[in-house]
Length: 358
Image 1 (cartoon, rainbow, N blue to C red):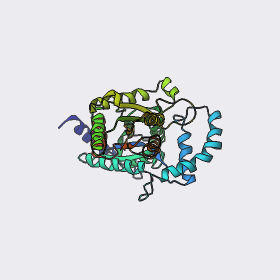
Image 2 (image 1 turned 120 degrees about the vertical axis):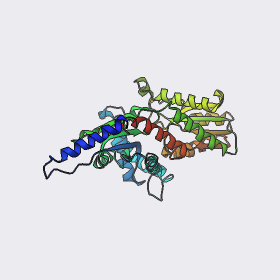
Image 3 (image 1 turned 90 degrees about the vertical axis):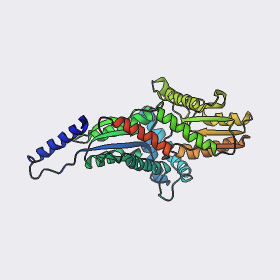
């Protein structure tokens, strides 16, 4: 018998022995479990104005996302953005909404990822898998409390962001740590690192792209690897996100054997008037179309699940930009989602970070 099972058995025996000395009215406490909590960004509870407003207020009030002084940002957010943006974004969400479950696709996919990961780790009877969102529901705090109620004394946090950024990975961890601060008996915690160059991730992306490209009825003249953008000053302040994205793009292109001149790396979803990471995806798509490129493919390696920024912005807005400026054949290749390839990545990361615990 190896060291870890023996240690776990000793811990259970010790707690069982201690229970004999508890007062008769001592509250019952479960123990001996290990939690795995998948963390993603979030999605509004509905497409109506007030659901969108609540979601956007929580998201855009996050100081990790908007690094502006409160005195400057508060009136802009509350008097302008939250007055006009909820209605417009609600219409965008309605175009991709999962009407069967009455939820955004990000929530549907993340739930599926957690359920499939639980099945893949089922040989470990003491592992409990769950999922949570940084914004809206299910909240990170509620799921951490639930895991503890199941007897999880240790929790592995898995932010589903391949590339570290303060506005994604860090704020997801912040929210988890805030929840832990409220607990008397805190579980021990690990955080899975970013995986921008993890061989399992690059291989899964390549396999997924090869399968999607094989289904097209055209050969793309250009392929754009597009990543979510961020203000340029965040990079200059030391955020490694840009470098992580560039590395993934290079490794993926090399893995697929695609010539440099056929592959571009761009950044999307800019917000506000200040400079963001460049080149911009929408401007690049427009330029290529005007230069005579007729067949274009977009892929978004930084998204672990398809959502508004991929389904509506890339497959919708950018498709129209390309076609309106002379392009003829356009395709957006789906994210890894809960596919076989996507689950291979999540499982590989979870098993790697659970080593020594299971």
